[in-house]
Image: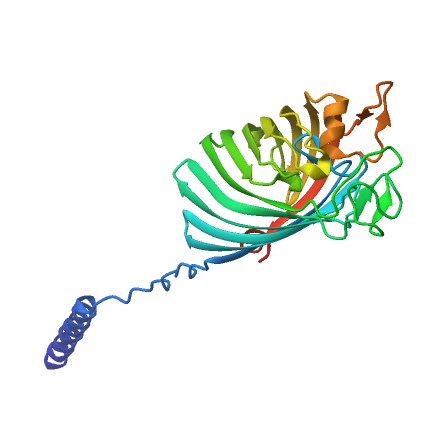
Length: 321
């Protein structure tokens, strides 16, 4: 009886002890394991854009700059993002050309500011078009009516051209993005001495772009777009070097289909102007111009044509990890 009682007391005590221990464990705060907070990457305001292209012809506002032959180009553009909606930029670009004055290339410098307000993006800046390595071209070898003696080469068709036709423009652009697939814009450029003609020049245009829905190409990474531009270039009367010639103001337009993949773009485009061949010759001083029965030069550098351009464009923050 005594032993039985002792066993019973010990059993009860053990149960109570276990119960007490369980109650104490439940009262302790549970350990909660959480992941370390993900920190947003620090904002880096600096970026660099650069790219290169090869085209079947270099056109500038509807006029050939490469004698209707292929051209290569490239650019380098550092950018500083003051905020996500305000960007400062500056850059240099170069293109191969074929001018009557035998300039080595087109070498440009530019700078500007790009503010954005929701769907509306602006771009204001200045652009310098440089044409180094040119010669003074006249109709007489070694110096003629317009070039200093000993400084000029001869133009067989009678056209002449200044040694330096460099100039600058100030510009403003605006673009409204309606949605992921459609945008419209307008541009204005002004130069006080367009192509060093001795006359000012203003160019204004409207542009539009339609981007194909991404669902069209599935997961291939390919994209496409349709874009176009209609513009007008206003010009005046040249200085004495070009015999005070009135230059024709003209319209130009283009429409094209483009395909994109990664950093690459293939652009296929139709371009035309309303310039006559003689008006084109006056603007270009085309060294390949023919002479008509009236003794006037006729250039094909402003006529309708199709062009193809393959380009690659990269930004450090978006494309290089």
